[in-house]
Length: 189
Image 1: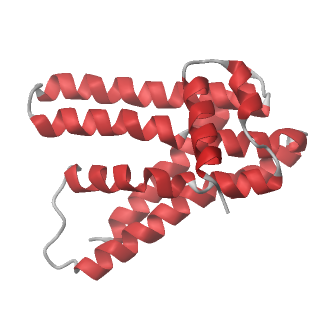
Image 2: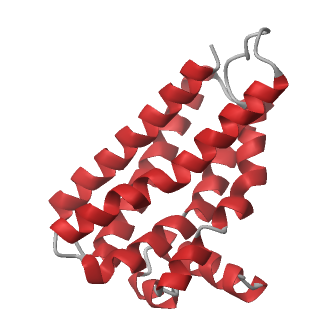
């Protein structure tokens, strides 16, 4: 079981990493139990994720029942939390980065804390109607760039890969997340 102290430490370390403090990687519990506990961040950020879904673009078709909507969203959420870590296990092994895999996954999972704050800020700005659509496009692009650069920093610091490989892995994770979104949307049509 995870303690409140461990949750705060994980989120604090992720915040420090977001601020580009490479020393913060040492704050993560990179043991196998630490990896398992880092998935608790999915529960921590779930309320923010639900708010983003509720305020998100696009109406839900009338023929989609509440049960189907919740089931599809729950499955997509679990897949989005597990697909990349599962995919990265053999990738890290192939790259000779087995020793850094646990540290990377812990940092990657806890990084959802700062990321959800960024996405919530953008979504709340969008829902407020304060800014024009043109400005929102720029804000969305800036938020995406921030999140992708954050993941790049985590890969470079925690997995210790080259800049080019880190860019390739960021692109791979982004493509996987887009595939999950498309599949989720397809199940709701």
